[in-house]
Length: 322
Ligand code: PBG
Image (cartoon, rainbow, N blue to C red; front, top):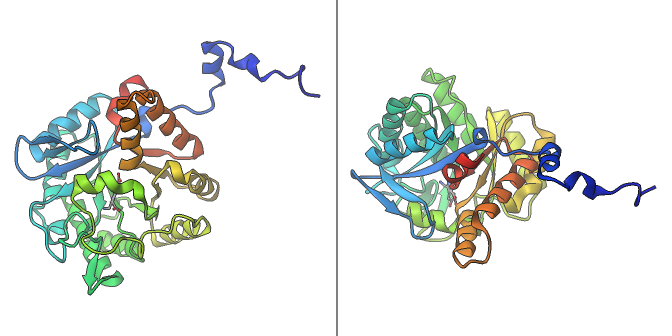
């Protein structure tokens, strides 16, 4: 027996009823804000393809994290953009590299803020690939060795969580091993486990100057149509010692996130990536959508699908309203 006995609209009638009936709530505690760090001082330069996003020098990123933490965002993830790049990404694991200096400055100023780091070579290599290149191929095992050194340098600088985003095979195990060997057994690994070769990274590559100079990332990042393979990636990373898993991008891959939620008990992160963020801003600028509502709706959908942590460029904008 259905209508007229059952009327779904009864519980939607007032804001108070809707508030009481709401199944999912976005909280400040869910949010992680990505931040770009560049060389220099006093730098706060807007990223043209990402409205509201800036690239900060180390001194300014400290100021920005204070503002963000005051707004109730518990975590940031730092991306370094060095001045000098080379074939092996020497800047990635330099003790005085851009990210290493930023981590120690931010942790010094705000010990309570959770500082995550993106572990990858693409911002540091002159060819823009995420690993070591031989000919036109990205070599897996040589890349893994560099990535492990990079994660270690981030831990030494004081990172709370290291997050490898390169998609080389075996990198989680290698990072776990090198961290443990150097008494960083308590530093967790958030693995970008199901990271797809996505067109939605476009604006990020502007911001990070990490567009591949030849080819693309399809020989290491996942093929977008693959769902079972994503579960396998995540399972392998857990076996290798990942503490938390990430799905990236977020909205086009909510099925993967929901699968992962059913399958795994670890914290799940989802990255609402640059293209997802900038599309909302672009449409809002044209007056086509209400940007703030659309952003909130996007993030609540990500939470509803099963994410515990949401990486979002809008984290600091939305936090006060949560
Ligand atoms: C790689 C990395 C990328 C992003 C995060 N880490 C770019 C890529 O794989 O090309 C994209 C994030 C975004 O688009 O917001 N280090």
